Image 1: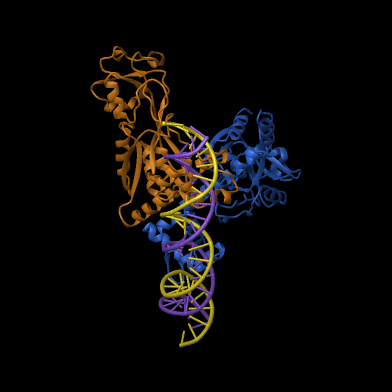
Image 2: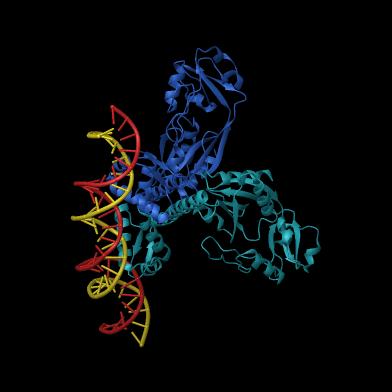
Amino acid sequence: METRELRYFVAVAEELHFGRAAQRLGIAQPPLSRAIRQLERRLGVTLLERTSRSVTLTEAGSVLLVEGRAALDAVDAADRRTRRAALASTGRPALVLVTKAGAAGELLPKLLDAYAAEPGAVTVDVLLCGVGEQERLLRDGRADVALLHLPFDSTTGLDTEELRTEGQVVVLPAGHPLARRAHLRMADVAALPGLPMPRWPSSDGTYPDGPGPQVRDHAQLLQLIALGRASAILPESCRVHLRRDLAAVPVLDAPAVTTVIAWPPHSRSLALAGLVRAATRL
Amino acid sequence: METRELRYFVAVAEELHFGRAAQRLGIAQPPLSRAIRQLERRLGVTLLERTSRSVTLTEAGSVLLVEGRAALDAVDAADRRTRRAALASTGRPALVLVTKAGAAGELLPKLLDAYAAEPGAVTVDVLLCGVGEQERLLRDGRADVALLHLPFDSTTGLDTEELRTEGQVVVLPAGHPLARRAHLRMADVAALPGLPMPRWPSSDGTYPDGPGPQVRDHAQLLQLIALGRASAILPESCRVHLRRDLAAVPVLDAPAVTTVIAWPPHSRSLALAGLVRAATRL
DNA sequence: GGGTGGCGATACCTCCCGGATATCGGTCCA
DNA sequence: TGGACCGATATCCGGGAGGTATCGCCACCC
């Protein structure tokens, strides 16, 4: 199976439409049809059910969609990491650390400082991304290491090291009646009248149904809370950079949040090892 | 990057010899040279240093060797799992469980029985393999799930669930003076005169230096112990199928061995989920 | 109910690229 | 110094990936 065939199949499986997929791939529709047919013949498996009105995935097709994406990510990762390794040996090597924008509190600067003080430390480029994107960035080689927050982020397929565990706070508009309380419980904040929890996008980019505004990042979220349109439960480290117009109250029985440093398995980079070591020593 | 190019590069990087690599790939040497050169040009990276007498990997080349193998495994996995998914929907679906030959004791039959009793259980094919091969089999799609033993097996890049933890015993020839002791300590068995610990192959198939015979599987190992040429520390569950001419004595301070059930991340199979559930309920 | 438009399949052509053979050039060694 | 080894280069050939034109099928609709 060639990566070209995989790319073609993934495009068709995502669009469920040969014409649009061909357009997305920058080729004409007939060669695409032929390539998919050839892939099916070589695998001996029907991947798509086509009528002249619709294209649907078979059971095997869904498997190939998931597995094919993973394989393409692995190929991309090989490409990117090879280029970066070449840069590293002929220029200034660098690590790319990715974390959710607005998260990680004061842990990140501490980590960067601690690592920078190590002998042989390399540049660390910090990449801020949206919720749920980190795993993808690690898997396809755009990032080397991530700061994740359990239980929100998935760490499947990654090596991790726990850094610290903290409680959570509910973030409210500064003037809210509950904002002056010393602490709260989940029951108190589960159904705050007029302040629903926001909805975050799923991995496919769509939003689940429900009340609450749609948000894409922390800045949006905090803005909405300040406007009195939402509330949110966040790790208590978010307090250090909270806006003046927001208040945070500890939620005693909220699940604890563990910050972990995560990296793709089989990483062999000395620089990465140094960064992880610095992180665990914090 | 196409998988063909990756396969070619991995072959050359492993052989460090264009002629032999070409032979292994079943093509002539000139197109292979050209393909590698083209890959280097497209990446903008020198992967191999060639003289007319030797070929060596650059730093970037070593990275691509590791990453490329992982990517090729992922592509193979996509291929195999797709074929199997097609079989599963048109015939009798099956799971492939892999474990070290001779390991897993009575846990494996228990697990198979418990799972078979579940509604909707599918056939479970058991694959026995050599030490250290399981991870590879999972990654390239030849197996769906494995029983591993911590801390011996690596679980990087896999999802796992712990099944049980047990102590270890030292396995000795039946007539050995220490064989009648009720228990021993690591210090007692660390340097048994004439009974060195065996050497297992590394992931690249070579054996580390040292005393002790080279072994490839448990049958070989037990044979050697019976012959009075070696001893070994194994999980105590090995006692249930120990040969008559061998004795096992608990080693109180040996590290505990944890048996885990492991599977590749992003697996979506219902059958696998059922098997894991059955395993955790044991 | 026939026209129409959308969509995947088919037919056919072109040209690039992957493969083969022959040969060159450099390096080590007898 | 000549021969053996090994990777690079030159050159040719065939398959296949990509394109355009067109067909066949079906849903929808006036």
